[in-house]
Amino acid sequence: MKKIGLLVKETSENRIKNSFKTSKGLIIVKYSGVSSPDMSSLRKTLRVAGANLFVVKNSIARRVLKDLGIKDLIPSVETPCAMVFFKDEPVDTSRALCAFRKGHEKLILEGGFLAEKLLTQKDIEIMSKLPSKDMLRAQVVMTLNAPILGFVIVLNQTIKKFVYCLDQIKKTKSS
Image (cartoon, rainbow, N blue to C red; front, side, top):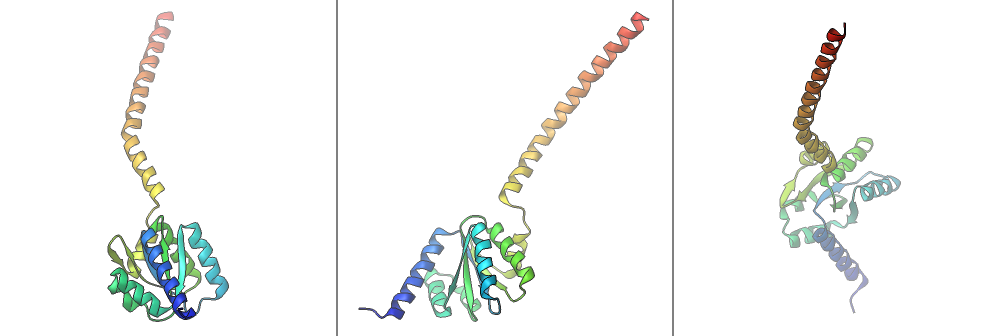
C-alpha cells in the first residue's frame, strides 16, 4: 500500500501529463504575492479563454517537464509557480494573462511551450497583441471581397451613367 504523499504526487503528475497531451501548449506563471481571491478570478478568466491553471509543487513540475522532454523550461520552475494549459487559442490565453498582469504586477510570465517551440515572456506578450483567429478570418474575407465589391461598384456606376445619359437624351428630345 502506497503512502498518501506518493499517491498525491502520482495523481498530480498524471493530471499534468494528461493536460499536456490534450492541450496545444503551456505557459509557466509565477504567482508569489498574488492573493487567493485574485488567483480564483484568474482561473475563471482563463477558463473562459479555454485554459486551465494548475498550481504544482516545483519538484513535481520539474519531473514532469523532464519526462515530457521540455528540459529547457526546468530552470523557470524555481519559486511557487503554476502551469497554464490552453486547449483553444493560445492568443486568447496570453491575452487573458497579460490583461490580468496589468492589475497584478506580481504575476510573472516565465515562459511556455507551443507547437514544439519554447516561448519567452516577450513571445507571450507579442502573442497577446495578435488578433484572434475569427478576426483574422474576417480580414481575409474582406481582403478577398474588396476587388469584387470594387468591380460591382464600377459596373453599377456605368449603368447609372447610361441611365442618366438616356434621361438627358429624353429631356432634350421632349423640349
